[in-house]
Image (cartoon, rainbow, N blue to C red; front, top):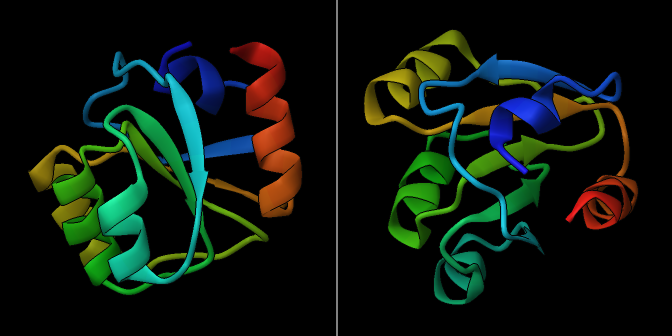
Length: 108
């Protein structure tokens, strides 16, 4: 499944999709950035409630296909603009991290 396909589902909203054709091959849930950096796999959809600029660096280093903001978390406009410039896809959802992962798992 691509990031664009996931973002098109009714439970999800596209925040910024500079690389909509990135494939999602797995899911990683985590909020401790150093932990995510060392454990998330390339092409994972990373689910988090973290909303600071550091999530962009972690997503880039881990090469995740997208960041998914759970539980209605939002980002400041400057973070969204930086994500666009760095080619980092971001999606949001009001669902819990668990329910997001279940939804993606059914599609993989």
